[in-house]
Length: 327
Ligand SMILES: [Fe+2]
View 1 (cartoon, helix red, strand yellow):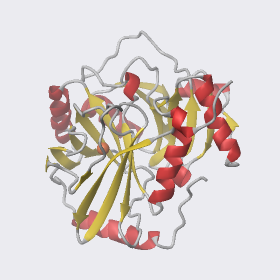
View 2 (cartoon, protein in one colour):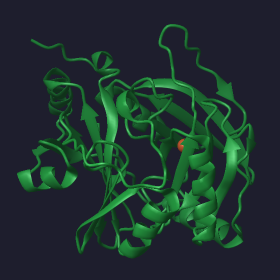
View 3 (cartoon, protein in one colour):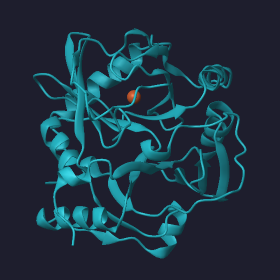
View 4 (cartoon, helix red, strand yellow):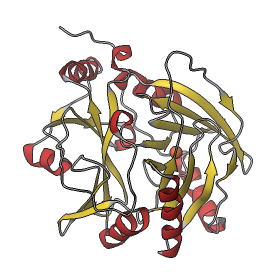
């Protein structure tokens, strides 16, 4: 028997893999392999993949013109956790589909389930990843994954309350803390959610007052965590040398204390490379509210005038666009 209930799911779910659709596979290869320092492999002419640990697949970059994330894969602990999640989805009348064997193979998992998630992202759930002992061939020495999952991601939402509830209910996520950040006369409220000891696997940002979404992508940034500080700073240097724009130089966040930088991917969204965030102990964790996104650094290193204009334009038009959130 198993108990249905989100609270039981805490510490049962971690980010497992991501799928991106892009028309710039060659540039993605340079980005992943030569700039960030990941293990790269072409699966076919139209499909590039990256590894960062024993999981045979962590990133799948498929040829296509979305220039965005299309799927997020979440690894769940066991059959009971999977049953709980499927039961919650059934109660919420969310249509769930079993992925095909071919698709499971592509994703490097034994089998998976999928449904339409926030902002049209496919949310995929699996238990067993396919692992490999083939040595990693990468410039970075290693990444922190294991019980923390592959990293974290951030989304902007016009319905943050609903989106936060979604992650809490579906995966038993808990709120770690909050940051408010004033920028260009707008206040941004960011909520950080954890699903396991990683301080946050998900961050949800929303504009205070009039709700806007100035992004053209479903995910604002994806973060992976390096084991060594030097690997992070070397990746920063290589990104610059190879002509990838640095959205924010090296700095530190006040809540998880991670040192990181943000680089723009060939698809246009940001990629955060971090080092040494704190993890959360459930025994004595206290939720805090911070007044700025960075304790120091994270200075913009690109000309922001045009991107600000585009963000303003997209933000304005987002007022008239609906945003799908399940539940
Ligand atoms: Fe982040």
